[in-house]
Length: 303
Ligand SMILES: [Zn+2]
Image 1 (cartoon, rainbow, N blue to C red):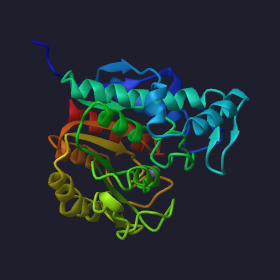
Image 2: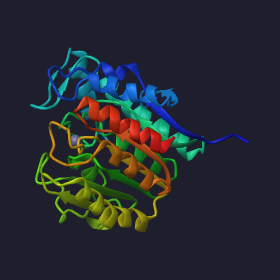
Image 3: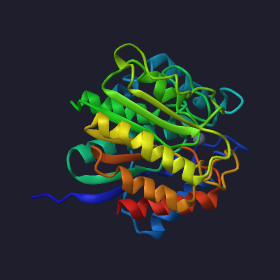
């Protein structure tokens, strides 16, 4: 009988090669998370690129081709925040490939949990729009991959300090996918009010939990326990994906929420057992020490 390994981290050298220039979402973030991986001796798996089929379940082929061609031409700015270099497309589709491989390993029972340590992040990317440092929506690609593999119900918990407008939009009217987000609000990207609850057959399967700037760790974890956990438990997903950003950390330079590094470990422990996984996907987090400490706490909680 094959044994289930508790945890693997999906990594790639490509994740350092997405170079947006002078930018908070910088290659040194990967050095910080890899330092955490080594510190706790977490097992690693080498990620490969997502298949074109997997990417096209979420993103139109012409959108993907436009980013690839911009990178092949040497890179450039998509908007003020979102800049690509020569290897950015390869890095992005490999971050998505990490997520689909992690889903496969968790569904097969080979892994109890997985952490995909890629960049650029993904949750702001809409089906046909790159924005907010994000090119390809890895959480959405992972969900669509799982659904295509026959998984009935998938939940995405997004604890990044920004609202995941892309993931919300992609599954807005899909009753098989629950999207739950805690985020600073009002804030970039502007979406994420409580009134946004999904539409059509998906009404009620989008749950936004906005937090005001300056919210303390206690306010965050109270909202998590009183609103996010009941929503996740009530949906009873077969698989849990976590958009794991670390910019809700109290030391983050871009955001104004109050989590400690240890709080991320507590969140991780709390969601274990809600469906298969979790499969965590790195999103934001821009203070390198906070990122190192927080990822270490998450890995300890998973291992
Ligand atoms: Zn963020």
